[in-house]
Amino acid sequence: MFFSKMASSSLDKKDLEIFQSLDQENYGRELARKAKGEFTLGEVNDGMGPHPVLITFESLEEFVEWLANQNDQSMSLYTVSSFNNQTISKIRLKYYLDNNYNPGWNSYCEYLRERR
Image 1 (cartoon, rainbow, N blue to C red):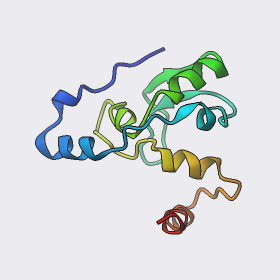
Image 2: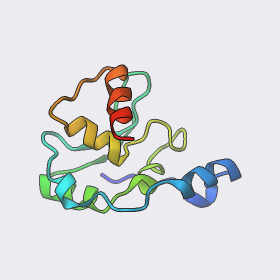
Image 3: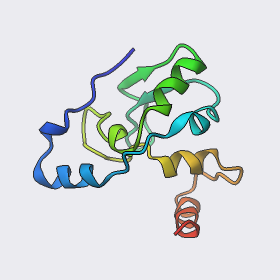
């Protein structure tokens, strides 16, 4: 199941500036291959979801091929409600796949501080 991305042409001036500043380098197969489990992309609001489900993948290889060709800019457009709101980014993927992953917000902030 594939959902159409939001068109960047529909963004207002402020959102377009944000969009243009996002990383355009693809995530690549090395990062994508580290994923395990079920492969679904959907919106999550305040811990509820994913709803709606935007994309599902039937196999690991299908998912890897898709994710390897995504980047922060392209991922910001997968939404039905709000541009670039809590979207997946390369740094979030790396944090989630890190051996010391902790779902707490403070842990994520510390992870970001350590990489600056």
